[in-house]
Image (cartoon, rainbow, N blue to C red; front, side):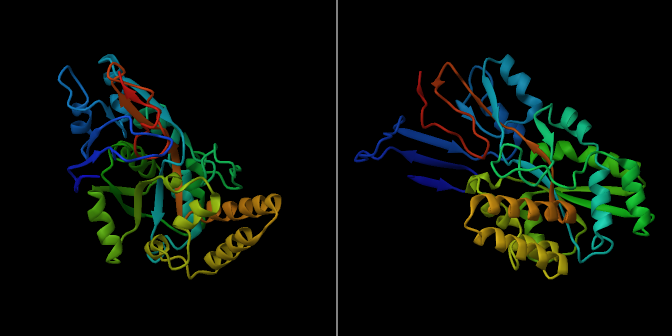
Length: 323
């Protein structure tokens, strides 16, 4: 790396004395950091495009880029939108309320309209391709009647929710479906999308909130279930501090189950224990995925070959070269 300018660009230059098995295919690279989706798409579009490749392509722009001659491909993984509840803020301390809001979401409409078909409704915290995946005992298939029943059982009426969200483009596209779904079961919903760093600064300052929608992809750490789940579910960890849940009896039971799975040397028994705690995480719905999505990469096939899309942030140029 020769230079790094936050939120602008990072430049790289091949190390001349490298003696490993994968010599650099490029002498120099300039990676542009472009948060705004439309600006990112514009950078690789048209006859005078300033970039040859981009990850995190918005689903709404796939056809446009393909018609412009670019190759656009996706890869599945742990990329997902999750909801995170503040259990210190009533009535979200009641698991029935958390479950109700998940059952209420019309995930098919979200996938068809916002994701253009490039996603699946979550049936576990883990994506279906993960080797430790199992369908959870609690699956939040769209069921507005069940959502209403759960709210009634919890004694909740006239609920108003402010949904804070990161300003990631595809998350923003999903928010109207959530609002429409919650409004349809009588939960008055206000959307508050905002800059990601600003939102999590509020979380770090322990500012009050009700529900947050955000994107995550722990596959950047690997595919090990224990590693993935402990990223979010660790007593005293950042995410558990946000949820204010980790001192509850249910949380302590979960963490004990996770520890037993971690310590188990027999792989078959470890997997069975992992499935047990995945069921608890699904049932409790404190921080839980709504949809798992493909990550899309676009590139100019006339200028680059050997590109491989990947299911976690970044671009894979290990087998690529200039045409």
